Length: 133
Image (tube, rainbow, N blue to C red; front, side):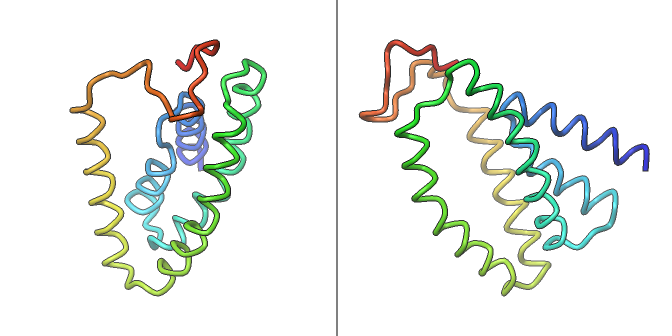
């Protein structure tokens, strides 16, 4: 149980740093705790709500969020999340685990090979008055 507390704390710290902590928690729950993939993903979603909520408050207090972009991403992401959750419950656990692993490897490879674009824009949502770091 102590290891679970330490792992969740460390993963929440990484979440606050903007690192994809959801994948880390799923990996911890499936590999260390031996939890089935779909259950680990469900627990991850609950965990993420609270860790991301705390991180969001910090970002809001520092005015790091662009409201129109957030609204756009939320409204377009909600239907995708519903479809994804429905698909996850229909897929065999072994396939779900392989897809999850392939996604993590692909995301990691892109992150490692991508050039730093600290001035990246989001179309009309770019705002020169904000430091987007």
